[in-house]
Amino acid sequence: MDSANGTLPDLDGLSIAELKSLLHEQHARIATKDEQIAIKDEQIVARDAQIISSALLIESLKLQILKLRRLQFGRRSEKREQEIEQLELWVEELETTEAQRTSAPTERAQSAPAAERAKKPRRAFPAHLPRETNTIMPCDEACPDCGGALAHLGEDVAEILELEPMRFKVLRTVRPKLACTHCDTIVQASAPTRPIERGMAGPGLLAHVLVGKYADHLPLYRQAEIYAREGVELDRTLLAQWVGNTAALLAPLTDALRTHVFAADVVHGDDTPLPVLAPGRGKTKTGRLWTYVRDERPCAGEAAPAVWFAYSPDRKGENPQTHLKDFTGVLHADGYAGFAKLYEGGQVREAACWAHVRRKFFDLHAANASAIAAEMLDRIGALYAIEKAIREQPPDQRRAVRRERSRPLLAALHVWLQQTLVPLSRKSALAKAIFYALHRWEALCRYCEDGRIEIDNNAAERALRCVALGRKNFLFAGSDAGGERAAALYSLLGSAKLNGLNLEAFLREVLARIADHPINRIAELLPWNLKAPETMQISDNAETPVLPA
Image (cartoon, rainbow, N blue to C red; front, side, top):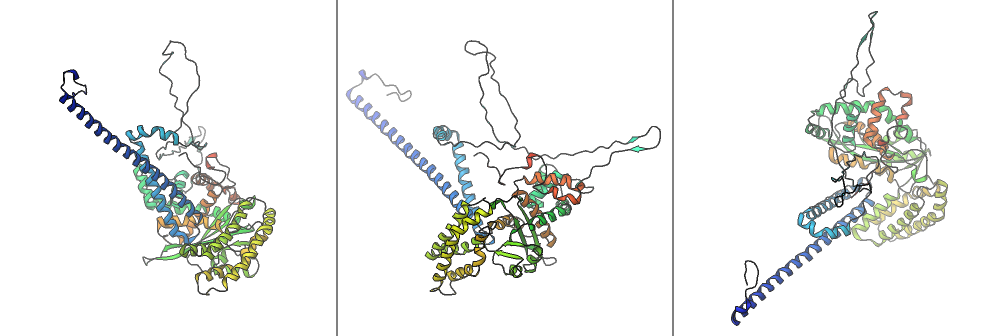
């Protein structure tokens, strides 16, 4: 056989021995090819198995993240938050590796049919995004087959998401001076008001800096580095001055938020630690950020949701007592003793949090697979299932359902807890968890008597998540004044988020108006009252829109 071109020689001229030799050679070549094919098949099977395994692992990790997010509550969840972040980084790495593999030319050619079968339908891009249309017409002016005229039949439309780089611009304000030709009078238009008097920053830039620091948790020195990459040198000290000046400008709006929150009949309250740099010592002390949330959406209330934050240098009970001195109604809160004095006069009624109770039993079950803790979790789960069914229903309807379905479950649970406690050591962790529930039983059951009350205090704990993220990036606040400033900005941004607004667009609109706005009409600039462009609204349910995969 001619090895160069793979053609057979003249078989008639070959002897029997030569024919046998040729047959053995062909058989050896076929066996080698078979081995190579078998190896390739094994590689394909292994690669497919790896793909399936990676896909299953990704889905498994995503499920774990979802489960952890459901279990994530309050300040004791920082360890769980780290677990979530590690899982998210792992999923991100797996998905990136898979995308890189399938983007390779050979892999893309081999896996194209399978990819087409597995492709999921895409969601449309958010409607508020601007569209730029690029129409590509055929090069042919006539039919390439017969030369006939071409008529419009239809079109294929494809969209991709693009991002424009940050673009600074300078706004020049020119005010010509006009002189009277008959006398010495000079006429000139008044200079427009700036957010910061004689400041060089426009409302859009100020809003971007504030959202970067308090919503995206970027310290000012990092923002200065980002701006420098765009060719604009903005010193960190200058950015700090802008933040301080803007916080002072927005103070009346923060006060209006506080008035709105405490005008409610039901308020959610909670607090979280905030490390603060101690002056002259080079160390940090522990301040507190307190949050108070008004959110009537679960009971079909018409009032706009809002959150108000307050800073204090310590956790003394006099702090919440000062915040709530004029409040009358129901306070959702945890078992912090500083709230106890508020309940003494009857002006404020306590509504305890079932999420706190559940968390104690969940930790016990996770630690030692306690059967008692597991049953408690099941019983609490039944209460939450009822709440899910009546969410966003009017208060009267919620109260009626709770009295019919939840109250019998609570009565049975109370008896079961008392019976379960009898044989337990009073010093055991399980006994302490049961005592925690029994000591707050009246406050835990109060939600059954008032349809406006929630089963837990998760509204306040959700509001505090921004503080945990900021703590991770900033490490500490620079001073007590910095803590107060953070509280004010968290209040504005948190309330805008609760009302489904684009945070930067909201602040830009407020800063463009507030300097000239009458102080007695400051409530017009609150998130739910502000009449502004549609770009401020990101969704109807206060959630960020999900982009296509």
